Image (cartoon, rainbow, N blue to C red; front, side, top):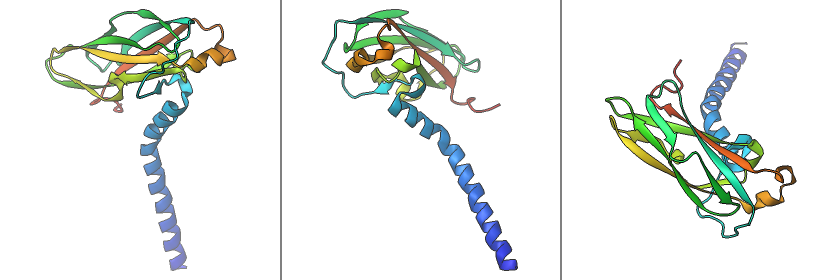
Length: 178
């Protein structure tokens, strides 16, 4: 009987440990899933742009937000651009640390409409890594992207004329704290 209780206790402990490990892995695994599939408007990532530029033109709008615990000013340098499907574009956002101390931020992003996320492909982006701004520092943060020509074959997006790329910056020190 005592051996059975030890075995049960060990099994339950292993299950609890496994659940804790999965809870820590859930966010990075979900982010990878979204980046691979474009799920939820998550843009795709590529090392280089495609060379197939189509005559169809879209307007891409840019939105910038900060979490209330993030004391930065964060804005797009241009509110929108026109881009041909397949054409590489380079735009930028401006961030300014409004405090007298260094702050590290993490940017989350999405694309709307969500169905366009799998075709919105970023080549270079400040959002790939955390960004640290020194006290009072102001920087431009580039984003290089293109719209995958496969979008032109997607019947659900045939009438699409506008895409919005949205970022929200969070303070790394306070994110996850209640």
